[in-house]
Length: 76
Image 1 (cartoon, helix red, strand yellow):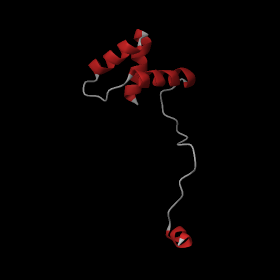
Image 2: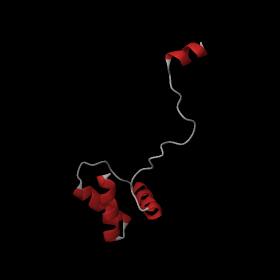
Image 3: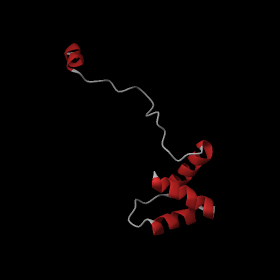
């Protein structure tokens, strides 16, 4: 989360995704490489929502079922 905030701060200081990427690699050596596409996506999310935090709603789609002894016996 802290890295995402640093990326957003660096971008708004430089107004350049490429310069942000270089600053990120320089300031946080050994960190996972952030591609321009990932950074652009993060910045787009910040512009839309005002936050870099991930969606707390969870994943979309079918909810995961619970595997209990009762369910296993019913299926058998």
